[in-house]
Image (tube, rainbow, N blue to C red; front, side, top):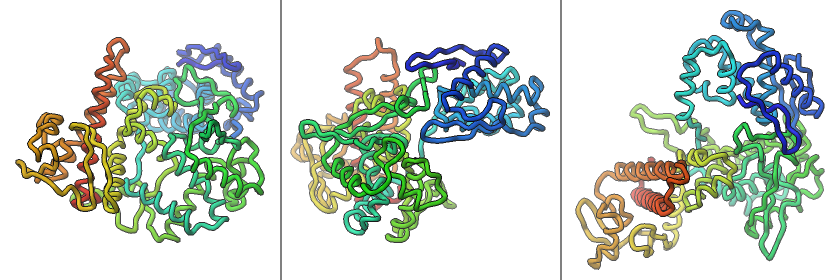
Length: 547
């Protein structure tokens, strides 16, 4: 592993560690003392549990484990020796991972040991090999079986962990409930209590901000220049870098950088309104927009961190679902896992009229990112905005892209039921067409369906040429075939074009052709729009909810 040895401001020194011997143990102990002196580590090296603090959180690293099990399966080290080696490894990871991840790392290693007879056999749960910090650990340990190393190498590039998003209608329903409650039913006290939820929904569904970054928005966060309000947000410098470049100090001012984003006057007004309402509350111990006094008083079960912590935020969302969505609006809140259930004939669980899937705070960042991709954002720009280290991470969002496309289709369908709307044409000759409450009204009978192209009805084949005569992918075609089969074909086309675009981005720079990128991006956008139209058509036929 490439271990971080020391760091001073922006200067860091690394060492390639291939084994942990006497020299490495001394280096690890010196590094421990540096972080101990700086107040990050608040216990002694020989303690079985270390306390780590980073101005936001305090976590415990628990180095106790089943000593009988270790004695039985580990021949290379004694229990005492292994515990020391384990701590040295964690010392080399300090400064490269946030303290919450360090805690997760310790847990992951212990879990792996218990499921591999101390790294002597491949675990039944293969995913244990891909958890945080595991790769470096198993390569450093001399007792690791060769078959485990080979297995880890074989699968690590194919392992992708994607966030499970809620059922698409639940996002629209949540937004409608929140807006209706805010505009008509919430009292002043309700707004003081739930304002972070309201701001989170309105900001992070547009700007892909992490949950912790949102809670750390500075108090004086809005500045107006030339009539345009700019929102200041602390963005993490601890994400999006490879481990060899990370330089985590566990200090807020050094581990986060303030960025500015142009926002609407409505967002600026919301922030101003929130600050007015909480003016009488005690300010946070850190420079933060949000106050935490009201949440600590409301629940004695939550620790007072001195600022609006992510724990407070998570509990606040739970309470909104309980007090507002369940009790006030009489909805049944179900977990995302429910959507994975199937009935006796293999059909996925279908939401009932009075049901809503519970959203997680981190979902909004993924939705905002997908919205950027769907609306033609440059993928390299998206990489910078989200703070990911490489383009591959951006494409992880595509795993849930189909869900978001359904959301967009559902939004168009809801609008079409109320009024006539104009939908931009992406394929064809670039003209616009209209969806009205009754759908497209003029069509021509063609093989296996109906064609709603105005040009085709006039004898002009321009729209046909645009799709190379393939009616099934044309937005103006309504087929007589099974809708679900047609939609599956469109979904596969979107996925295939995402993969092609990924291959272009990932290729060596000298082999990239800019014209090819423009074509690929246009093709993807066209496929997405065609899929949206297919979903809208299915909604009109009453089948969308079954999907």
